[in-house]
Image 1: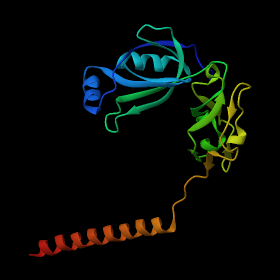
Image 2: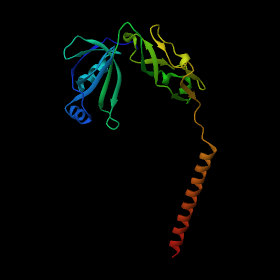
Image 3: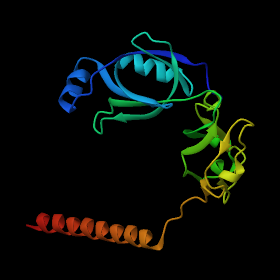
Image 4: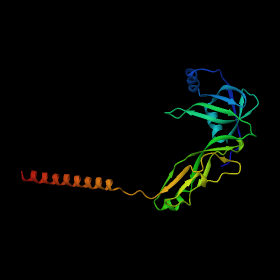
Length: 221
């Protein structure tokens, strides 16, 4: 999917501070961040949590960043740090870019058409192995995500990166032999599992038999 139109993000400069101040910011609905690169000094900033979520959800790779009302600078998301428990954003890193120079980025990979696959219809198991790809393109050409149609996959098929078609403006940087997905035969019950089931049935049968005999003995008394 191609990158969508750029979105504007207005942030406010902040003084570098420790973790305690950062926690206070987050409690007030603000997210600490930093923008760097482009041959300029790194600048710490703070941004409204809801505003950040809205912009990142609707934007493509490039965001027009304005610091304290200054002229906008094109940036891309470098890293979004989330809390390991509740998943809330705790820090954001942005990187200044030039729109005429290619950059590298990590893009999600989605597989579509799984339910229509003949192999899946026959009971096969599709395993999605690689879910992100490293690409190189101009900032405005970085896609939001890459989709690949697996509706023709049969049982026993293996999909590698070599089988994916990149657009004319995007270059894949990962090894062409990178495993993307496999479609395996239906899982067969192993001899060990069958033995366990048979043993369970025997144990259950013996228990029921003992219970019946116990009830018969009790009746005689």
